[in-house]
Image 1 (cartoon, helix red, strand yellow):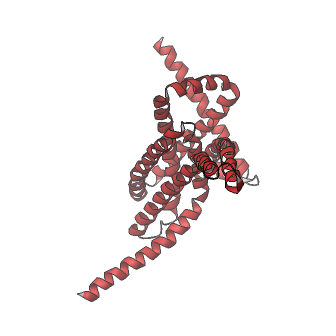
Image 2 (cartoon, helix red, strand yellow):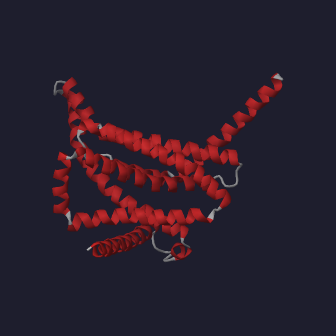
Image 3 (spheres, one colour):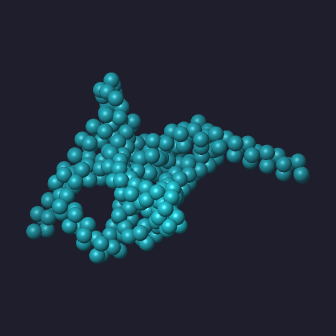
Length: 287
């Protein structure tokens, strides 16, 4: 009886070893998406009062965890019963990401003054702004989470169902904890800087470090905002290139990054055009 118990423990240990290896491989393959996820969500988790940054980030993190809880079992079931559906889901998600990225670019170049006016109103109605930004962040996280889970699943398709479930679950948890943990550190840089300055009485190395952190935060946020927009378009283009054969073989000598960005940009322009057209049709029918 004791030998049977130790045999079970040995099997569990072997399974965990296999999961550790497959999770490492899957995490390496999803590293690019995780980087894009970080850039996108860091941009979306900022722009609030200091006292509201962590509560907002926690709400987004809970939404991200819920996304993973929904996506992981659905992805495993679809892969088992209806694998072709995963490709269509990814392509639809790609159009959504492309739309968000291109809409930001259009807004910056053509509606910047309107956006600044809205931003001023947002300060007065911060709860509505929080809800809108949290909803947008969780929706974007859902699309990126689908991509992360699918890529992780693709690395273990030849493994047993137990290894598939555990590997994808581990990657999903690591993605959420890792990405939002780093985002939390970024958005609290200025608070850490103020504390260092205060502790050092505005003198010496720690005071200089604190001031550097305070001054660096707006620059980092601006860079992340730009990187987040580029990331949305790149991820969407990557989805199209890897899931549509024609695009995969289109211009094979062109650098993959340029190709994916161009395809994502075109897809985004189409998505924005269709969306605006539908909105105008709806407004005409309402009149």
